Every structure is written in C-alpha cells, then in structure tokens.
Amino acid sequence: MSYPLSYWIKNAKYLSSEGSIQKGHLYIKDGKIDKITPISNPGEKIEQCLFDASNFLTLPGLINAHTHLPMVLFRGLGDDLPLKQWLFDIIFPLESKWEPEEIYIASLVGISELLHSGCTCFADMYFFVDNIVQAVAESGIRACLSLGLTAKDKDQGLQSSEHYFKTYHHSYDQRIAMHLAPHAIYTCPPEYLSDIIALASKLDATIHMHINETKLETLEHFEKFHQQPIETLHDIGLFEQTVLAAHCVHLSIDELNILSKAKNLLVAHNPSSNMKLASGIAPVANMLKNRIKIALGTDGAASNNNLNMFTEMRIASLLSKVAENDPTSLNAQEVLNMTTTVPGKFFGDPLLGTIQENAPADLIFIENHHIHLLPNYNYISNLAYAMKGNEVNTVIINGKLIMQDHSILTFNEKQIKEKFLNIAEKYS
Image 1 (cartoon, rainbow, N blue to C red):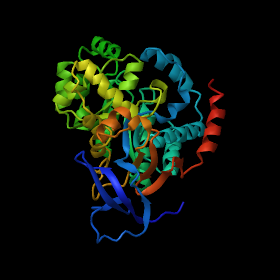
Image 2 (cartoon, helix red, strand yellow; image 1 turned 180 degrees about the horizontal axis):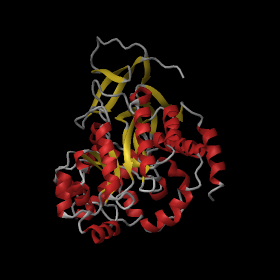
Image 3 (cartoon, rainbow, N blue to C red; image 1 turned 90 degrees about the vertical axis):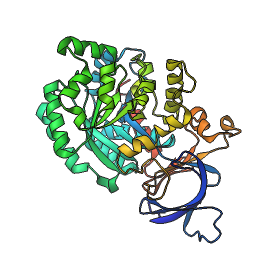
Image 4 (cartoon, helix red, strand yellow; image 1 turned 135 degrees about the vertical axis):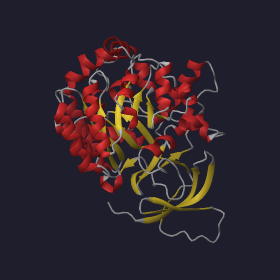
C-alpha cells in the first residue's frame, strides 16, 4: 500500500496531553506528529492533506497492557469456571492442539478486533512468537510481545526468549518490542525465576508476568514458602528490573509497600477478566494512593470475552467506585490515562499515548454523531462511560493509514475471518 511519507490532517478536534480538547492541524512526518498548528492560523499552508478530521474526535490510539491475543479462538469455551479449573482443565489441553498457522490467523483476528475498537498497541504473552510477529508485521499494529515461560520449558524457554529478543526487539520500524514472560510464580518456581531475571538484566528487557491474580495462588504460595508471593519476588530481585505486573488483585500491606518502591513497575489491571473468573477486585485506589502506575488490559478473549478497551475503561471505573463506596473513585480522566499516557511512557517512546509534537503518530478518529453519545456535553465522560468501540472510523499507526471508514487496509479481513472459522471447527 502506498501512502505519503508526510501529510496534513486538517481540522482535528483532538485530546491534548493535558486532557483538554483542542483544535488544530496535525502535520505527520516520518511516523511522528511533527507539528501542530492552530486552526485559526490563516498563514499556514495545508498541502498533501490526508483527510479532513472535522467530523471526528481525534484521540491517541488506545493501549491494551495485557492480553493473550490468539486466545480469541477459545472465546466462549470454558465459561463460568474458576481460574485454576478453567486454566488446567480447559485452556491448557486446548493449547496443546495449536498449529503455527492457526496462531497466525487467530492473531490477525485478534488484531482486527483491536483495531476496530481503537487499540493501536498491545502487550502480549503467548507461544509461537514467530507467527504472532508475522501477524503484527503484516497488520501495522504496535506490540510488545513475549514467549510465555513455565518451569517445564527450562533452558529451552530461556534460549528461545533470548533469540526472540535479539531477532525482533525494536524491529519493523520500532513497532515491535520484546519482553520476557514468566507465566506466574506457581508455574515458575523461584530458582527458575532467578534465571529469567538474570537474562532480563543481561538484555535490559522488561519482565511481563501474572502476579497475585487469585487468592488461592497467594495462599498456596504462603503455605509452601512462608511468605507472600510478592515478598518472594522481591527477595529474588524481580523488582530491580522493569516489570509489567498483570492483575495484582490480592495484595497484603507489605506487598503493596514493595510495589510502591519498585524500580520501574506498571500494573496491568484487568477488571473484566477478574470479574468473570471471580478472581477478586484489585485495590486500584490503594495502588494509586501509593503512586503505583496502573494501565488497563483485557486479558485474553477466552476470559473476558472481548478485547474492547472502551468497555474496559467503563468497567474499571464503575468497579472501583462500588468497591470504594465512592463515586469519585477512578474518574473518567484517570481511566482514559490508563489506556493512553500511562502505558505509553512504559512501552517505548515516552510520548506514546499522547497527541503533541514529536509524539508517535498513533491516532484514532471517532465518530461523534452516534445516538448514544449525544448531546456530547463532555467528551471525556463519553469516552469513559458511553463509547462502545464501533465509533472508531479511522486508525493511523506509526504515521501509516491502517484502517479507514471502518475497513482495514493492511490485510484481507474477510478472507482471514473465513480461515478462522474453518480452524474453529477443530475446537468445537
């Protein structure tokens, strides 16, 4: 697909990095927002205009801080079960049947779902990394990928992770980053985690890990090691590294204190998945009070059952309000920041997730005319509480036009859907 290397987006009504709605012309060059000029500036010459954004609300692309993308194939299988039973009785046996081509197709289906609901970057932990990379490269989306590791992988898992890091980190125009991903403390005992931490230190790699997702895992760990999981992780040096900590639902006061002092930590809060699996309610308000950075994730579609970040914003805010018995808890601006500016700083370019000069040109354009958004008194409120995701009309990632008028331009979505449904017959 050919596209101009530099162009204008004129008449944009955009969300600024301060959270206010501004108006301006955006000049995109070499994958970045090179310049923003006021609409009122009569002297600015607007040439090579990609399109007129006056009918849209322009946002930085949303960021999904934790998912397992190919698991869209398992959507609707194993519903209404507790996590341990769901994982060991349903998911692990299904995953043993995977074929590499199925991972590629399922990843494209997941990416399609992300793009249609305005997500331009995601952090993933799974298997068959080469095939997920293929889907990410082809689609044009931005991603932080990792190979899920368990103790049964041992040295092979470490070798593969190092290979993937050296092969793909900062590849495809810097769109792909690679992390190391021990699955959890109950599948990766401390001695194996120590090896993973050593490799992360050697590579200067982020560690993406499920931490304290259920009460059962924290109790079982305490019975075995006589301390809480995060205390063990602290003792073996995990938090000396950059850590993406998925869930963090059950935290003791001591564990909360450890996280508050962590060197470079981002918690990925997954409220829909935690509710569906009855894992519990993460103490988001307490974490924020302790200045712990929090982003939002969907988790996999097998435990959510969708990848919609607008839905996740609404649920995260409402869940925090009822958990705290406080209607001011986790307000609209805070949950919006959890899908844009907060994870953006963590996932690469420090300006990712913002619309300002020199920021990556990852942009989504939202239709404001839908009946459920009217009368548009408060755009921030609408984004957090009223959006459904289908309002996203156009997506630009790294300066490239990826979706326009609800149609993905980088791959044949209809063809991929047909292949996906054929694959699903194997698992039905």
